[in-house]
Image (tube, rainbow, N blue to C red; front, side, top):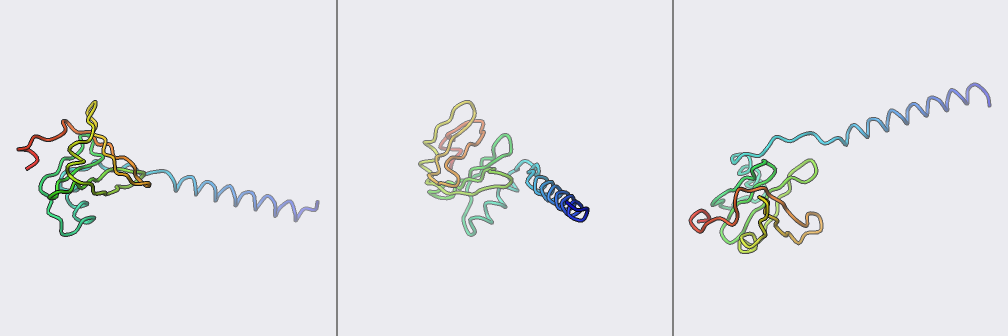
Length: 130
């Protein structure tokens, strides 16, 4: 092997290592600020324009929210490094299982099959849900 080949090989290896390091750094998820009611309302309004949000329940850990809009439940939850919004019937949301402070909402969606929201209590009382 001559000297030029070794220099080219070393330069190529260094360039590949730099590209791998940049790709690894770019995939590091940035921490998100916890949701509050105003931000949850804004995000849900962006995802479901024109929908009237009657009531919003924000998760105690700030990682999601659930809103009632007529006969629908609008769900916002953290997935990866962003938020995902889905819609299910309100009756399905109310009948979802609640155990150890977490409500598990079945979304029947391949991309996001289940949402888990940490709430103080569920289902809401009829007075709360109205």
